[in-house]
Image (tube, rainbow, N blue to C red; front, side):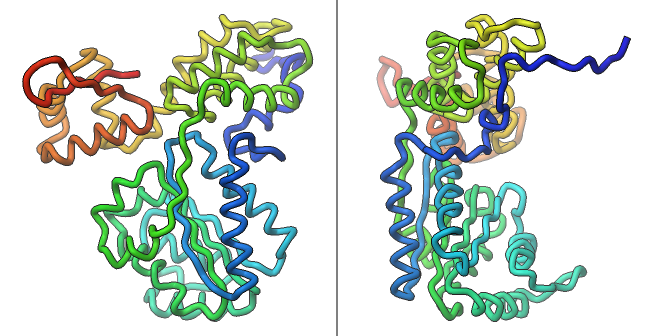
Length: 349
């Protein structure tokens, strides 16, 4: 008996459509965002000016998909405009980010290190071969504390590039901005575009559009889409979580030899989808989730004490920022208790 028996694909017609990184031809409920980003780029290219756009919102709210959608359209509209997308979750240091930008431009740099000034000089010279440039720094909050030098570099790029330049930064929260040098924030983050959490009806419509292409007709029903949408909403209006849930439920149904996805399939994969989301969190936030899983709802003070015991000393102010970030990401609920003083309790969603 072979360990690798082929699975008959009776449900999934096009699995790539349910990939979290897939960019569809239509992005429901983000039309105004797309237009605003495209207008800023178009204006810069037509007038020869430069601008910065700070895109912020919880995970799964369409930030990266929207930017990739605009860049795809830009390739047809202005093929002589240079584009670079850099994920700062992967490229976190000044060295790696400069190297990634140079690589996209095919600018050779020494493998054993280089002086940033020399690297930028080569980059600026190569950018002169293009009509303009659009550079994207995604997950920019991941580099803010350790590599703020590179953010200062990018805040000054307009002064050295001979041509229009649009710099787009993307982050899940804006808390990190307040710890940066004002010279950086006043330039990089002056124009903000906020992506709000999706509602359940919006998530359901997004899933419906994906399912029409990805799944066989008659292989799912409205209850399946509704439950996946509800799971995405509980994760903070996260379309990625909702789409992942539908994909994993479809895979499970096929593995079992079933002809249709059911609510039972969705329930069976919901926990694994949630676990994948938590594992992608910043390491400093994960212990908070672990503590709440073990203990249930806790007062902030008790949660702080347990966190310090496990991880080490941090200030209460920094810890409150962690809680605020988890709340914004839709992972925890925070409520004020009916007692004297500003006493709050935290629980997992």
